[in-house]
Length: 214
Image 1 (cartoon, rainbow, N blue to C red):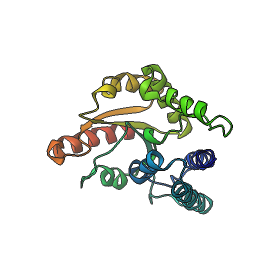
Image 2 (tube, helix red, strand yellow; image 1 turned 135 degrees about the vertical axis):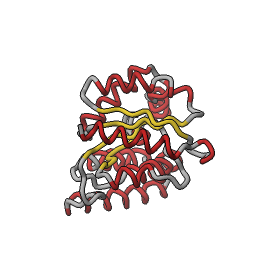
Image 3 (cartoon, rainbow, N blue to C red; image 1 turned 90 degrees about the vertical axis):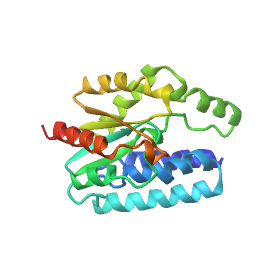
Image 4 (cartoon, rainbow, N blue to C red; image 1 turned 45 degrees about the vertical axis):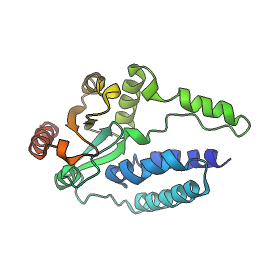
């Protein structure tokens, strides 16, 4: 069952991404990795892709190579997406030694598929989706990721159109702050640069950086 093997590959990738220094950038996890998980589960293309990605990350881990030269802090990226047009968010973070080791959209929330019960496995996957469940589940997952990836902060990129999930952003943040994890709600638009405020974004990121350093 191809989806089962792909699930195993993704699980191993996510485990390796806990390594320090951070072996793979969250900015890339938010782009083609999330896309491949969404579109290619159960296909030959998906298997080839995740095998190659696992090998790439494993080599970096074995060589103790991080994607930043000077990693000072680690932060989670929460919510589905990032801006997919030229913007300075990740270059700002990288310049200041802030690594993004993992992102909420690539969390493996569903159980390993059962080759003998494919339809039940599909039902389990749908019912396990935290975006369709209670906010408490999403809060628990965020806290679990914060521990697993040993982060000092979390950025919730609040794409303006995703109102069904943005309403819980501050509650997720409160749960993380109770653990000592710094939290930033970063409003923006993943698709339309006309809805993106460069000045406000850099101001918020600067204040967030100061909180990490403090």
